[in-house]
Amino acid sequence: MDYDTINLLGLQPDLVQELNIIRIDDVININLTLKKIDYVCPECGSIHIVVKDYYKRKITHSIFNTNSCVINYNCRRLKCKDCGNTFIENNPFTVSNQRISNATILQVLKDCKRANYTFTSIAEKNHLSASSVINIFDQYVDIFPGKLPYVLSIDEFYLGKTWKNKYACVFIDWKKGTIMDVYPSRKKYDLYSYMQYIPKNQFSNVKYVSMDMNPTYRDFAYHHFKGCIVMADSFHVIKNINDALKNLRIRIMNKYERTSKEYYLLKHWNYLLMKRNGDIEDNIPKYNKKIGYAINKLGILDLILEIDSVLKKAYRWKEDYLDFNEDYSFENASERFDELYTQLVEMNINEFKDVVSLLKNWKKEIINSFITIDDRRISNGPIESINSRIKIILKTSLKYKNFQRLRNRIMYCINKSSLPLLSNQKKTNRQPGKKRGTYNKHK
Image (cartoon, rainbow, N blue to C red):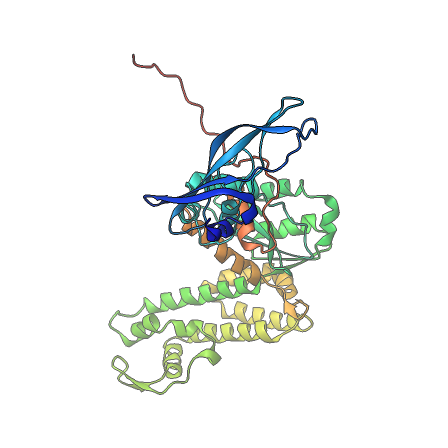
């Protein structure tokens, strides 16, 4: 008897009556019969049980990644002599009416935790069909929404053009770094409708709400979470400032001939304007053919800033704002913010008009973003990390068409605490297709 195979199947040798292995092409066939044990009738409780007959059960068992494996299980059908009830014997591989082993199901669910694995790749790895993997996932994975957290982060991610709503909204527990829920719309009316299904006693849990600069989210937060502190993510403020500086650089660059030194500096060394001044390497000067002499990166930055006085002012202001964002606290941020805002207004740069409006309309939320909890400044950093992993799930798939399945996959992959269901109750997230129309059958 092959004891290695018995161990791979998770059996005890004294439970096996007969076992042999046959390889047919690339399929490993394990022919198996279990020893007969004493059974009790599930109907009447009688112990007078006899073997009525045998029948073959073909069970897919993915214990080898390189080859497909099938258990040809010689299953007994038992009969109660007292009440005549028939039933099949229990086995350690699978439950009744299931053709995939429990070990294979567990491996599939483990693989589904990997964000870079598609259902198709999981199917190939476990020698199953993609539809079988999807059915296993739908049957055992159904993630319930989490409770509203103390610090709630709100953001969206791009679903695609084929969806009714191109963007989905994701709610994050900022302290735990886990997804509370994913909703297939970021529109105000839809979000308000979504909140109707959340118990009202959870609303008081939320004390802080972090978001990007979406007015819908701000109105949503103030409306539902009374007395909460809303904060605008500092990353999005800085992104708007950098975008304005980029547009200013492009406008100035286009005033010069493409062969000019000014165009060369603004075109090929533009990244120096985006970096923090203190992060630019003070490297050894190297000869630059276009400039005509040896120069290092800090020297190139000085040349860029001398091209246009407006660009120089905007760059210096950007650096001052970044210093403010890094060095100030909630207690002293308001006064410095007003100084920076006044300076920007006085500069009157066309490309920065949107930044001026943004700072004016979001002052309260920007100042609130300096609040710290457990020595951590509240931001959308955790949610941006989660969004990057969501993009991996969407990018590696051939586009999900079922949002409930996508939501479950996102939460199952990203939330480490998410576990599959223990219930074996059949369910599916498959959406009904269009009804087939009438047709005339050709005779």
